[in-house]
Length: 126
Image (cartoon, rainbow, N blue to C red; front, side):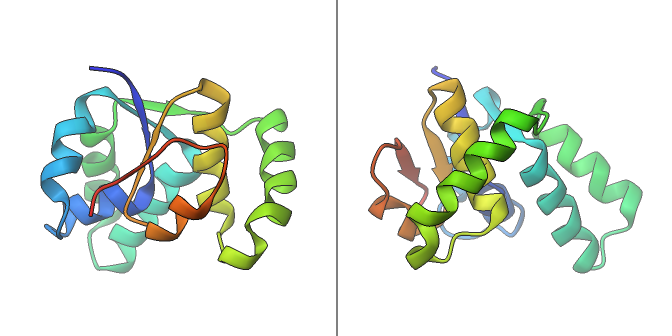
């Protein structure tokens, strides 16, 4: 199966057993995640009361490949802010999209609004 970039929203949907979890499971073995989004997942788990060490273990067990957020990606994320301003995309959203574009891989997300973007291959989980 082809590799994919996974967004925090998709992984959190899986962890919350939400609609679309089955699709996330299907893609998960071949997913890569931006370090920014990896941090988002751990942050959300901790905020929901999961102990820090357990939150880190959960994220590590699910995502084998985490890509560092570098200077070039930082610039691309900033440039993407104009294109996505009306959609309300966060820095984390733009980091995920930028990683997909950088690696030339589709992006898996739960955020339906992303389908309005041009120039990205987006797979919705629901």
